[in-house]
Image 1 (cartoon, helix red, strand yellow):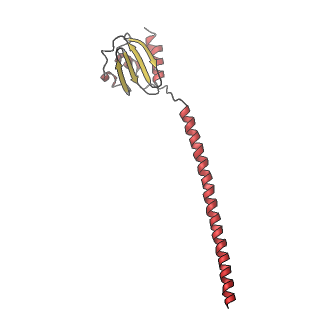
Image 2 (image 1 turned 180 degrees about the horizontal axis):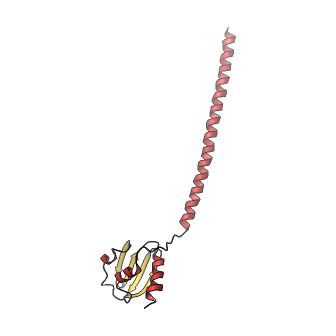
Image 3 (image 1 turned 90 degrees about the vertical axis):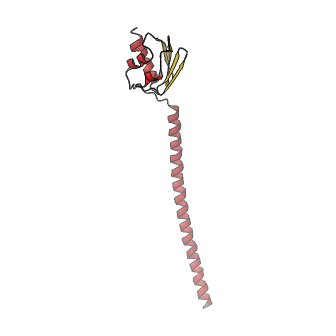
Length: 142
């Protein structure tokens, strides 16, 4: 009788070990496969972010009338030159003392810096399009 019980427990232990090992292998393969998928998509997302950060986004859309901007800086007679950087317009003016911040309320201007005869306006990613349009359409008709 002892022999029979011992043999049955030995078979149960072997069966238990086999079941546990199969579950362990199943869970390990589950973790490993989803881990690979996670790291694959994570690296792909990182490369997309790095690619996006290296590209310069410039808008050509102007949401306001250019004549309103020119009138706000004192008219085309007051403008000596206009330059554009990434998101700023830099005006060199003859008389900057007459200009106030309230003149730019109707125009999409995010920032306003006045220094002597220089005026800097933060307009967003369309600053280059605004400067080009003012130089071509308004100042050349002078």
